View 1 (cartoon, rainbow, N blue to C red):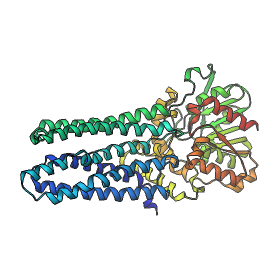
View 2 (view 1 turned 30 degrees about the horizontal axis):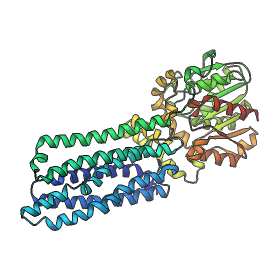
View 3 (view 1 turned 45 degrees about the vertical axis):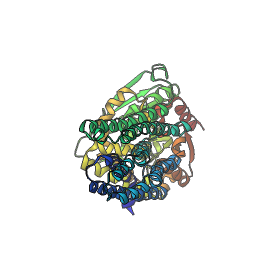
View 4 (view 1 turned 90 degrees about the horizontal axis):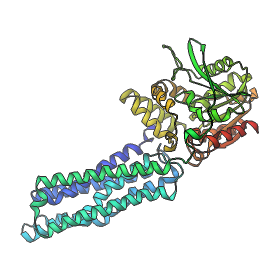
Length: 502
């Protein structure tokens, strides 16, 4: 079964490649030399069209059965429409003409030759194939690009771009038909015009991608406050604690009950800069760089251990002169917070566990274990950068998060990718919390997930729901997505504050 998981992405890429071949063959057909070549190209067009039909069926089945990693249910139907529409237009408009061309291609009189030329350059023959290239390109971007809440505007963007491209193609092939009416085949067939045709196609292709991504980013950017206006400057005290052979960097803000915030993948105190500043009016907020990330060290040889991450959190807490604290963890940090509650319950007054990627509690656990195994293999084969791209797509965080990342953290975080992919990811993903022990320990565990994460049924939101049920724990809905402490810090911090006070 594992071989079926994640096929939607390579199938979509192959789908685009075949449409490009169809677009090139159909656009070039009227200007090839020799009727045997016309017949050969028509047959190739038919074969590729059948392949497009087969791939459409496979992608729809993959998405409908839930084998895909990247399909989002709230926009999956639109992905399917963008797959099917160009194929339908080819079947109704272009394929009937291929039959007529094949029937006429053996006739050698000039009148019939002119008719074949007219058919092979007709708008209704060429345009559906060309439009298929652009529809699939936009669909692939729409499929890969992690959106926030889908609004009517987000659907109108690809529709509007396709309409603009359709108009541009219509006028382009109208000109070609005017030339054909004069039977001036040489004008379109010379090398200068070939270069012009190729350049126009590339410009439309790259321009459609650039326009779509630009508009998509603009429409998903949060309207949250600018970084400078979020809160007055809060004094930050920093230090290091030596534990188990390494030095861990930490920061302390404010006075009051201690609140320890454990970062997830990327492991830097900068994850919580904005909310830590906000919460410092009521809590003494403690953040830190996890072992091997940013300003903290990790001396090899050393295996990554979830239990060591819990011990590190306790070491940071005690370095700031506290025996216990309120604890928050997001993503991988939520896993370490659970381990801390299991192994060191005396150090926790209450813990909020936000979207832990404990995929082994999911009913479709094999699917997600396969994904992260594939990411790890990608790192070994193609490098950490490609693996991190695959990881980012699977998490599905909208663009709004990345437009509000603190600059200093962004510079440090780039260096933590290898630690995340090569050392931390698989041990964290394979972690299974001891439910019975957590219950016996009596720690107040509050499970949490973002509203958008729940709406899109992200796997890390589903784990939070399942663990809340298993632990008989309170469940709190936070604003936004997996990383909304970046783009909605005020609302997000207030939700965390209320979670501890209730």
